[in-house]
Image (cartoon, rainbow, N blue to C red; front, side):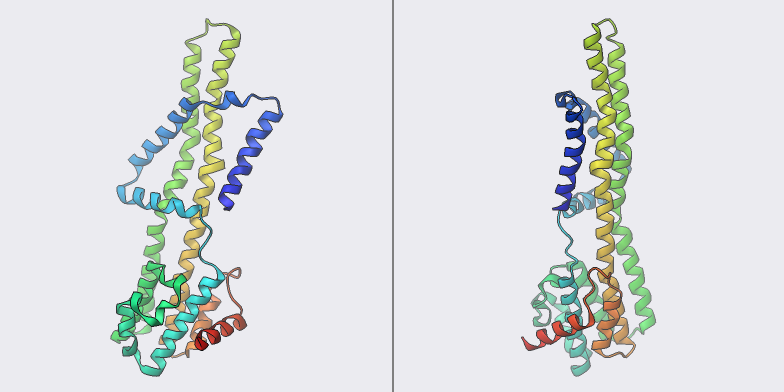
Length: 286
């Protein structure tokens, strides 16, 4: 929603200010300039990125228009779920969760935490490391190293759409200049026409530079920044799981293990100790 609001403000400020200054909005409508700028930028993106990056970027872009799913409620569910899993392990042993981690979609242990279960990457991460804990063949240091490597891989892979959009935005002003130069060339071919028509051609040529800069800094560039923020938020969930599971492996009780996980969250989404404790108690009573 904020993306739409931001775009409305950009359009209103730029075009509204131009109109208030006495400019004619119709002069800015240059579809051929948009074709040159957008087509060249898109073509260059195809050259500079492989198919995997292009697919990931197309998939990631709709998510930029949505609000963040990493809310306090989501983290409360995540830590309560981890508490339930670790409590079951402490009471019944590691083998008691083998069926849950093999089929998490069918597990009654996980099913009540819908905000977490719907995040398939996060659930895969949790189940994979619970499976390693069940195997009993790796110590905490080995699992921590493996977790760090996987989180780094996730971050690098998920950064591809950010890089794609950022490069796309960086190229738009240059392609705007290309469109403007093409307009100037066309104008120079028409130097014999009346001054008023010549002025119109010059104005049309300058619109190319204007559109390239506006699209880059008013529309495409901010999306790159937003995708990067969403990436950082998604990585935080993995770090929360990592710290919680490692605390359990090092012998801490479930209540203390989830407290370790709570501490790594951003302050804007981090529940207080009392909020998390109350949520866990409510979950137990259901």
